[in-house]
Length: 117
Image (cartoon, rainbow, N blue to C red; front, side, top):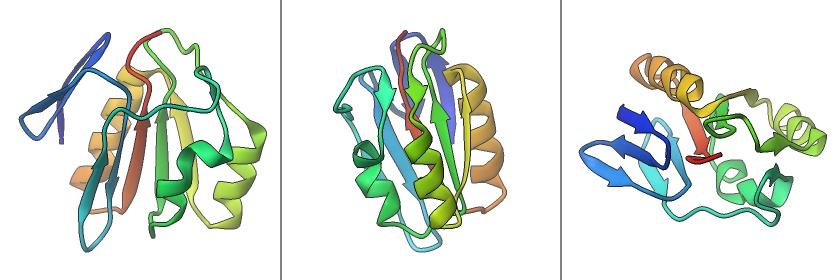
């Protein structure tokens, strides 16, 4: 679980990350993709989530930044729907709470977190 989030910093399982990251929890394993960057910094596009699309998850929780600056392209929503992945996007503090709810419920989940603006 994520034990702490503040602007520019996220702590997951006793390790602190200071750059954007993706966390994927499936029934078989957990994967972390640190230093995650997007094709366009504040616009989330389908190709930015290739690692998520490769994994059997039920949910994708997107943290859009402390102030919600990152926008989710409508194509991301369509891609998630085609793969039967429920997508939820919130400012990162709320996204962390939602991710933790799903994570602790043994639901397969991916979190894509923008840590700053």
